[in-house]
Image 1: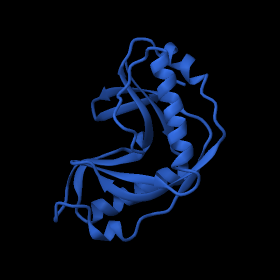
Image 2: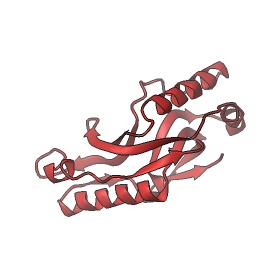
Image 3: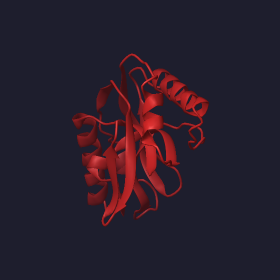
Image 4: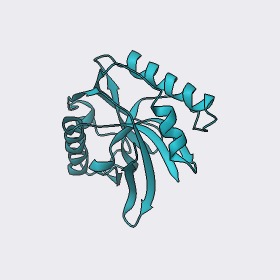
Length: 170
C-alpha cells in the first residue's frame, strides 16, 4: 500500500488554493490540477509499505505543540506548480516537526523518500500556459490563508479511475 505522512488543510486554506486554481484556469492554464480534497502538505513520502500499523506506532511518538502556517508565494519544480508556506511559526516549527518525524521513521526502519524537505502544496502538474510560466497576474495577487497545525495524518494513496484518491488512515 502506498503511504505518506501529511498535514491536511483546513477549509480556509483549501478554499484559498481552490480559488487560486480557478484563477489559473481563467487565465488559460491547463494541466492536472490537484483536486480540492487532495490538497495537503507532505511531510514524508513512504511509498509502498505493507503495514500501516508500523507507521501509526511511529506517529504516536511524535509530540508537538500546535503551530501556525500560512500561504506564502508560488513557485515551480519543473513541471509542477506549488503554493509555498511561510509566516506564522513556520518554517522553524514545521521543519523541526518534519525532522523529528523523519528521524523516528528511520529509527523504526521505515523507508521514506529522503529528498530535502521543501514545504509546498502541489497545485497543478504538467501545467501549460500561454507564456510557459506562472502567469504574472497570479504572482502579483496571491491569496492569504492560514491555519493551526494540530495533528499529522497517515494517508494512503490509490490510483482511481479519475486520478489519485487519498484516504486518511490515522
